[in-house]
Image (cartoon, rainbow, N blue to C red; front, side, top):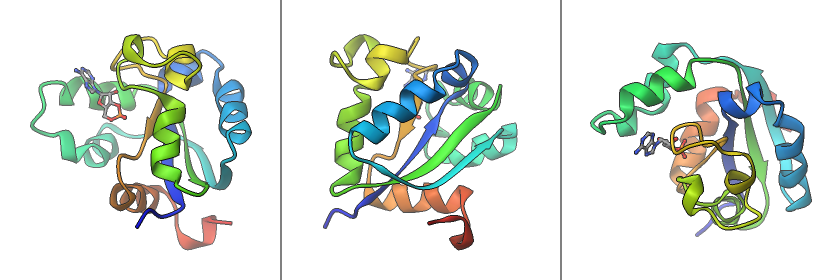
Length: 139
Ligand code: CMP
């Protein structure tokens, strides 16, 4: 059964380009409630751990370097059918393939610097939220 929470990061390229406000506005207007939020920076070690699932992929090194290159915004979001609806809102991983009006179509530069992360399953949403937030940081 789908849970009502997902996890997102606004990635270094989007932070650098001052897109935090625009992206959060789209998230709120799509009906997501912010359960937890943090402005922080990943070390290379932490980025490697977060994306461990992609360890064998050819882009893993690039991904880890990039995700530890600057600050990010991490958040847990709540809405009915959160994981699927958030993936619809952000669009395809490759922004050239993302639908019009999606966050990645509007804000992403490339497949690596693709503006936002969104969990791909309820299980990963839980794991990823737990990676950043204690119970006391969720409201
Ligand atoms: P994200 O949703 O954060 O999950 C894994 C990330 O790996 C993905 O977004 C992309 O930023 C990145 N990624 C996926 N495929 C590639 C690729 N072919 N080259 C570089 N980065 C990639």
